[in-house]
Image (cartoon, rainbow, N blue to C red):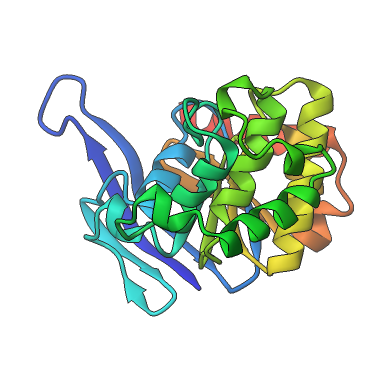
Length: 257
């Protein structure tokens, strides 16, 4: 479903602050698989996610999503096949629009449509049904501006919006990091449910080692722009947080040498 082949990305090439963010990185994610990325600051995990999203284009290598070669396709050209949830709940939604207007924008992703046309009765019914699955009572507040909601509520809406067009790949960019522990747990439970129900091919970036241990079919440890460990589900099931932290710490020390 997703193939990242020998990707290299260098920022500020030729300048004094040149940084090799990714170096010959490859990743193959079959359809329906969930991959968790962990690594320290500057390890390359966010750059990898941004390259898949089209926020950046690679200097070399190839990115294939489904049957589409997306290597040189910019971010807006991938909107119809990718869903993304950001760390900051403020980024994934428009504060000044209502819940239903935000969903209308998500439903028209990849095409220009006015809100009046997009918000027909059929779409409103679909939005109401989807919101009801959250158990937050938001189905009765569809005309409330999103800026009045809590961070957890906004992030829940962001997840539903990200998958409303059945994306080929879902990107989760530390999507619980800005939430309090209760909201974080609630959003992770929702994430697992949605991924399972839609059989979504997913890449999740996180700093939370508990999330890395408990979620996904494999966890990848990155350091200095390289993939240094790939841990399959069978091995994760036998590991403790201390075991995973030891691998994480070893990767950082090795990279520093």
